[in-house]
Structures are given as C-alpha cells and as structure tokens.
Image (cartoon, rainbow, N blue to C red; front, side, top):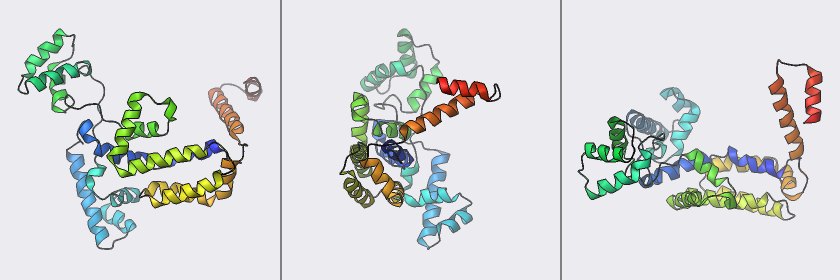
Length: 281
C-alpha cells in the first residue's frame, strides 16, 4: 500500500526549483544581479529563436531539430514568457572579504568615491589577510551593496518543504520575501502547506485531495500539473494512503538498510556474514 510519507515525497519531483528560479529573479534587488555575459546573451538568443519558430506554428520536436537542442531544453525556453526568467543570479563561494562586508558598505555609503587602497588598508587593520585583487573583484561583483547572498533555487525549495516549526527566523524571512515576489511562488507555497496537512491520515482527506487537485490545476504551474496527473492515475492508492493509518514505511526502511549493508560489504565477504549483519541490525 502506498504510504502518506511516500505521497509527500512526490513533491520533490515537482518543478519547485523552476518556480524558485522565477522568485530568485524577482528577488534580484536583495542579492547579486543576474549574471550578464556570453551565457546570458546565448540564453536570450535561443529564447528568441524558439519563440520565433513557435509563432510560425513549428512544433517542439521540429524546433529542437532545427536549433540542434535537446527537446527538454526547447520546452523550457518555450514555457517562459520572458528570457530574463532563465538567467540565474551568480553563485559565489565564501571569501575572506565576507566578514568585512558591513564595514565596506558603511564606508562606501559615507564616501562612494573612497579608493580601494584605503578600504584595503582599513580592513587589513581589522584582520583581513586576503589580496587586493580579491577585494576589487568582490566590489565589482556588487557583493558589498547586496543585502544578502543570492538564495539558490535548491535551498529555497528545501525551505518550502521543511516543516514550519523547524524553520529558523532568517529562513522564514526568505520564504516570505519569495512569496511576495511573484504570484506563482505564493500559490505554490499555499498548495504545499495545504497538501502537507493531508499527510496526516484522516477520513475526510479523500475529498480534500480532490479539492486540492482542482485548485492546483487552476494555477499557472505546469510542473505541478504533472504531479496532479500522476495522483489522478493512481487515485485509489493515494486515497488509501491519505485516509488509512497503514503504510509500508517500515518495509521501505528495512529495504534501504539492507541495501546499505550489502553495498558496504560488496566484494569483501560472503552471504553468511551478510545474513548475520542483517539479523543484528
């Protein structure tokens, strides 16, 4: 029998990261600006080519053949209404300049024309051990003026799928900022919350699930529609998972532990030792 936990895990197969990228783009004022360069120019050019062919009635498969692109790539370009939604904000690794960002920001607000050499000398007195080139690159990337580092779609997705009582204050702030950034993120966050309530088995969950599917299909979330179609194909099993207290979570856990033990012993021992380890696990 399908368990409610497994139904919930199906949310990880949604296009949450794609919607998160949309929110990330709209949150550009709170982090580094979207990357501009050769990759961004290529993205805009491909978007224009795909939409030009689609306006002429060319199918997706034919577009992929003419542009020498993968079919899923063409679908992704065709799905969005503007190319900027495909351009991601840059991802930066932590640097030696990060602890002195507040000082640099304050100094640049006081005097926007302050020389970099002066800033370098000041933060070195505070303990900075990096090079001047690192500081110059940090400033040119706009990381001093940014309120916070760019939030990756993967991390925003993890925040959305975390129980609200386990979120930290700064994580709640990022979720609220994403919810107010675009309608798609607001709708997605509400749908996730309402679906999570159904994971606690109850008698009326079958009717609530039908209502939830109708609400999800009414939103402009194509990747979520694929999830709802999967639920409808196996509606009886999903209803049983959300209404009955029985589930096969224990069996899946034992299977996972058995596979882990087998992989740890692969090529090192025989079946009798594997049997003893499973029995003693």
